[in-house]
Image 1 (cartoon, chains in turn blue, purple, brown, red):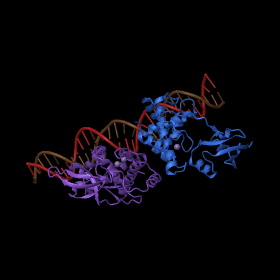
Image 2 (cartoon, rainbow over the protein chains, first blue to last red):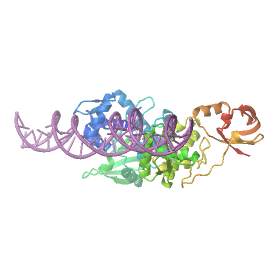
Image 3 (cartoon, rainbow over the protein chains, first blue to last red):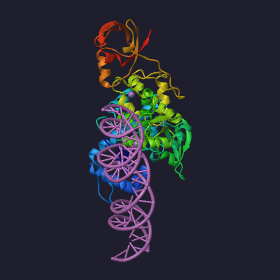
Length: 218
Length: 218
DNA sequence: AAAAATATTTAGGGCATCCTAACTATTATT
DNA sequence: AATAATAGTTAGGATGCCCTAAATATTTTT
Ligand SMILES: [Mn+2]
Ligand SMILES: [Mn+2]
Ligand SMILES: [Mn+2]
Ligand SMILES: [Mn+2]
C-alpha cells in the first residue's frame, strides 16, 4: 500500500506532532529522519498529493485523518514487534528498536494480529509506550514526568521518554525498570537531583535522568 | 549488507542452479523473478562485480562460494520464518510463503538465531524443505518422488515439490500432509495414476499429484 | 552451411528517493 | 522599517532498479 519511505515519514510526522502544536517543520523532519530538508519537502508534497498530510509551503506538515490512521498502524506494528522480541525471544529492551524499525514494514495483517494474540493483547511496549489498538484507537496517555513530581511522592515507573540504548543500559545498571517503585525523599536545590528510593534502595538521580522517566502515582 | 533485490536474485539463482547443470539463463531468472531479461543482465553484471556470481556473457550465471553462502543465509531465514509462522502462530502451510518472502530480508543475526532456538533448531520447513544450518552447511537431500516409486512401496511423505497454495489446499482436502504414511497398491497403465493408501485410507492420485510429493521409505 | 528462430545484451528512458547548491520566504535583530 | 539570520523551496543531478525496442549472439531447422 505505502512504501517504506512513506511509512517512515508518516511515523516521524506523527511523533513530532505530539509536542509541536503547529505544523511539523521541514528541518525537524529532516533531522529526525536523518535526511536533508530538500528531500523532506519533496516527500511531504508527495504525501499531500495522496491526502496523507496537509501541507502549506513554509508552514510545515500535519497528518490528515488518513495519514494518522496509517501512522498508527505502523506504530502498532513497531511496538508489538518490540514486545514480542522482549517477551518471547529474550531480547533486552535496549536491543529491540532497530530490528523493530525493519519489522514494522512487513505487510501482513494476519501476522500482526497473530503476534498481538500470542502476547495476549499487550497494552504497552517494553519502554512503556502504549500500543495502538487494531481498531485505530490510541489510548490517551496521562503520564507524569519524574522530575516534576513533588517531594514525598510515591509511585511506579511506567515508561521512558528516551529509549536510546545508552540510557536504557544505564537504567539496567541502576536496576531501574518499568514497574519499579519509587519514593522521592528530597530534591537538591543546587542541581535538582533527586534523592529517591527505587524498590527500597536509596540513590541519587540527576535531573536529566528524572526528566526521562515517566511515572504513575499510587 | 546486500539489497533486497540482490538477495532475491541470489536466492533465485541458487534454486535454478539445483536443476540445470550449466549456468542459469537470463530468461529463466527473468521468469522466476517476474522481471525482464534486460533487468536480469544488468543485475547479474552487478553481482559479478561483487564476486557473488560468475557470469559469462550469453552463457548464464553461477553462484560463487560467497554468493552461495549469502543465498543460503536468505533461504535459512525464509524457512525458519515459515516454520515459526506454522508452529507458533498457527498459520496454515499454504499461507506462509508470501510473508516469509518479506521476513527473509530482515537483517538481524540475533533475531534469526532466536527464532531458530525458539523452534528448537528445526531441520525442515513446513513443506519439508531442509533448513540450512547456521554454519552455512546445507544437508544433502536424497528424497524420492512418489510417482517414481514401485508398486508395493511403503513409506512416508516428507515433502512437497510444488508449494503453491492451490496444491497445498488440495492436499489438505485429501488429508495428505508431511508424515502421512502411504502404501502403493497399484499403478494404472493408462495415465500412471496411483492406487494408494494414505494413512490407511485408499484413494487415487494422479500422476501429476504424485510427481509433486517427496517420500522416504520405511 | 545458410536461414530462421530464439536468447541475450545494449541503448535509452522512467520512477523513487536522495543529495548539493542556489534561490526565496519567514523571523529575529537592530 | 530595514537588515541580518534562519528556514524552506527549487533546480539540477546521482543511484538503484526496472522497462521497451533495437541490435547481436547462439541455437535450431532446413
Ligand atoms: Mn522503538
Ligand atoms: Mn521504520
Ligand atoms: Mn517459501
Ligand atoms: Mn524475497
